[in-house]
Image (cartoon, rainbow, N blue to C red; front, side):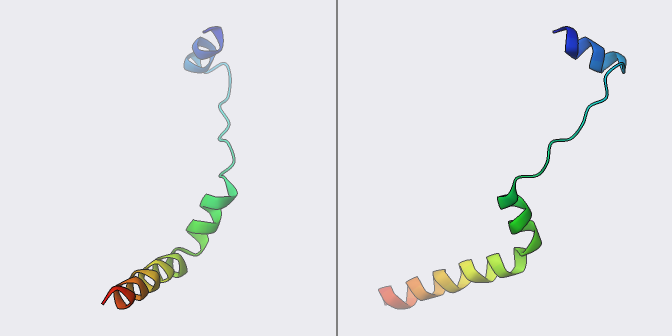
Length: 49
């Protein structure tokens, strides 16, 4: 609890944690991820018809 008070008082600097690798990968290739999902969905629809 003491650390929280120090942070709120501005005595301790808060550092941001690093972004997980999976999220970095998804953010870097969001278009390819979306197109991959759409292709899979279309393939499933074609298979069930």
